[in-house]
Amino acid sequence: MKTRFSKCTPIIITLISVLTLSCTQYEIPGTQVRESQQEFEPIDVSTCDPDTIYFQNTVLPLVVSSCATTGCHDKASHKDGIILTDYASIIRTGEIKPGDPNDSEFFESLTDNGDDLMPPPPYSPLNSDQIQTIKQWIVQGAKDNSCIDGCDTTAVSYAGQIWPMMQSYCTGCHSSSAPGGGIVIADYDDMVALADNGSLTGSIRWESGYAKMPTNQQLSECNINLLQKWIDEGYPDN
Image (tube, rainbow, N blue to C red; front, side, top):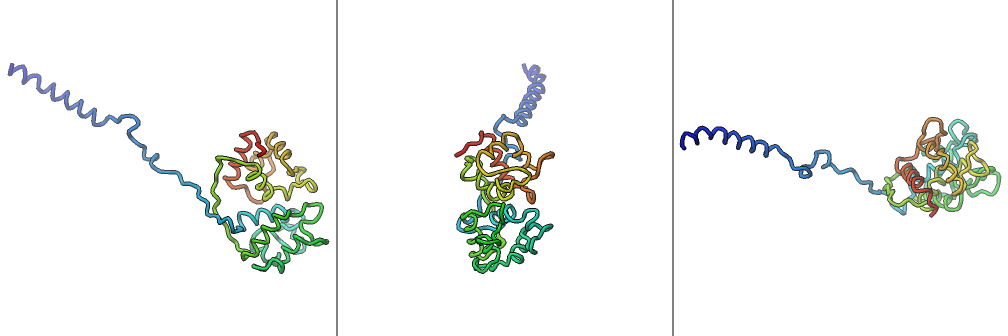
């Protein structure tokens, strides 16, 4: 018995070693977390104060779309020496007096009843809400400010997100009275037509073969995603 035991011992020890080594190296699926999975993606948290009007987020897109068009107040045309494509030019050539909209030439032109009304016919004038936005921005000091707006695409609303975006970035160049490039963006039906034929997606993504929209600066990734989700969900009109 002793002889047999001594002969078997190396085999048993070797087998135990193999099993021990194997068990040590074996990972049960689902119990190990990959290193890359431990890194959390950054969450978009809004830094915008709802009571503050931000130039880069709201005022500039609106002014560029409505006023800095070809033949009017872009850098190439600079009609009457006025350029409305960037902060410094808007403050200087628009003769804006921070804190005092009533003494700011640019603001006065938005509410003028005569030949100085801007945008001039056949372009559509800014609506009362847009005028109030620019007025409030000047009252708050006409600052070159911006904020990070949280990008929430969980529930996309045409009335709350899509159409206001169009009013800020597109309708100034594509009104029914002055349709830039022959494209009209005046209401919901116009939006659906552009979405149906694929030109809306192609333009906002600046894809080859489509006119870039907006021409001066591409929409943010957040706004593109909002528009894409609205399209993917079948253009809800709520």
